[in-house]
Image (tube, rainbow, N blue to C red):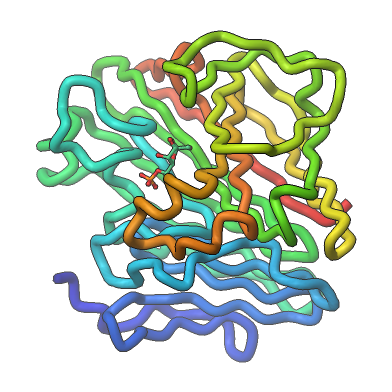
Length: 298
Ligand code: TA6
């Protein structure tokens, strides 16, 4: 267990670090623009709410909220692999970054401009035991009326390495039966509910009628969630990302997840900004890669 003390320095009145009873070090951000929260465990943004709007992110009421456990909701940082690790069933799903304690590199900003927090994770013996490469990862969290997340990966070592990454964002919606997603019309996808079969979306906005787990390769689209229940639109723009992942567990998968309420599945939808599978990144020695998701109300 890493001691949470001394706490990092925030910005008086607008960005405050505190420790939860379960030992999570959290950063709370509040300006006239919005409120947000993140944990150093996993560099995990758990809350974002533009002033005057409802929260944009979903977090399960059954989620673990303890160091070393993944949080079911918000924006899990998946790195350096996505999903189950090929050939290593013991490896943590979606990589080790989301269950590892990140450090604070900087917290800057003001009531007027909003707040930017930069969290950093560098390779250690523990990470090298999972993945034999030195790396530096930074998550830059820019909180204004919009939420801009940038995952930067650097290769300080002498050899290239290949990695996958995802900002696995859980969006809060009124009812998945009623929402549509635009931006993916006509796009090809791999259907993980159908053994990864390659399919293609039709010309109409994406609707949801059952468990949905789709990877859209070579996809740079801006996606918009149209939610008539609020009503509102949530726009997800991205740069440096060539995979889009769309997920809702629906009834059976929701019931099978201990850290997810059986009745919560209609209130969430993951639209993930990623580089996975054939879009995985090969990073040359000394190189740096950035992937950004910009989340805003439309
Ligand atoms: O991104 C979709 C997905 O890969 C699904 O297959 C499902 O496993 C989901 O991620 C949640 O993964 P987790 O490891 O957080 O339970």
